[in-house]
Amino acid sequence: MFDVWESVHQLSQPCLTRAATEPAISSEGVVKDSNLRSIDTFLWEDVERAVLEGGVRPFQHESLYTADKWLTTSALQKSIRRGHSELAERYARSSVRIDPDHAFRRLAIIALEDVGLGDLKLVSETLAILGNKLRRRSLGEERLAVHLAVRMSSAMKSRLACDLLSLIEYDNEASKKAERVSCLDTVALSNFVRRENFGSTTQLVSLWMLHGTDRLRSRQLNSIEGQGQRGLMRLMTNLSAPLIFHYIVRMGLSRCRDSLALPYVLLAQFADQNPLLRTVRSDIPRPELIGSYPSFAYDMHTRIGRRAIKKFEVNCTEQLRALGVRDVGNLIFALEGGCLDRRLSSVGIEPIRSSACALEVFGHENSINEDILFELNLLPKLDAIRRQAAVSV
Image (cartoon, rainbow, N blue to C red):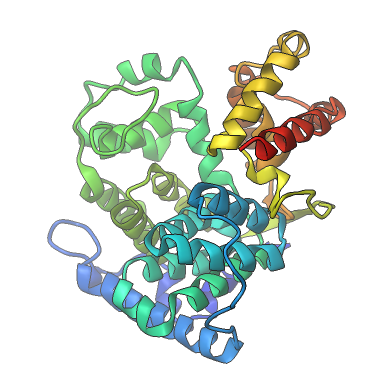
């Protein structure tokens, strides 16, 4: 069994795993900024000690593979997911040389999206590093990026936060469900978040609307003004959320400006109620390279990847239609992009994971057997098209 709190205990700050005490709460009902800055301080101290003791070389002298930052960060993220530490180091160094600010923001997104409950300390440290450019430069940005990328590669992983968002973002009925709570005030929305079953659409929609969809855009929800970060932080105080989650939600929203931080309000309760979780290991082979990059890096977020996936879609139209596939890009992600070398699992996690995958690929919540997707043997066809697309550039 995996202990969700083990990594946080390594900081020797017992307060982080408990609810914020009264002296730490401001008159607005949120954790004081001074307390969050204190967390920043000892997270940085822990990182600096680990980097200096770890012996990571500040620089490597090999040339860049390409100046394409999207292809490089795509390779970085998927190498981390699959536990390929050597590849993660390679693309972390290249990514920092191309665009350091983009690289560290992407590392923070990876931490929120793919590491999550697997290492809360690492998620927090990545957010701390993102927030201080001067300190990054002083310690060495390339060395810091490698430190984070290698640690993420070897970390236990959880995509639960991302899966929770998918239950809204890929559900065509989410906007209708949002209409039912759109007229509710802050107290009523907070009550829905508090009382609804974990991962229900009503709970997730209420949480997003409490924050406001005008500040964090949703592909399914209309723009509605909400309470912003303060609304969520007050809710977390009322829910007696562990202090480390106050830090992750606040810094995830302010430094990443990404909706991935929203589900951590719910994960705070989940972690408190489910401190021990099962682990699942996957046998992931070494990737096939196309040029200097693994084939899975050519995804729908890269220029060459989009071109290849479009041609793949044309060539396999009948087969995809017979399967009921709604989004080919999401199908490719289900086949290769979301592969994790080691992930957390539980009775509460697996139905959400399955529903999220079904919504992304097929547009409905019916659970699916992932083995069926892999038995289709579509990836060799796609990789052949990717090679053609890469050569033609």
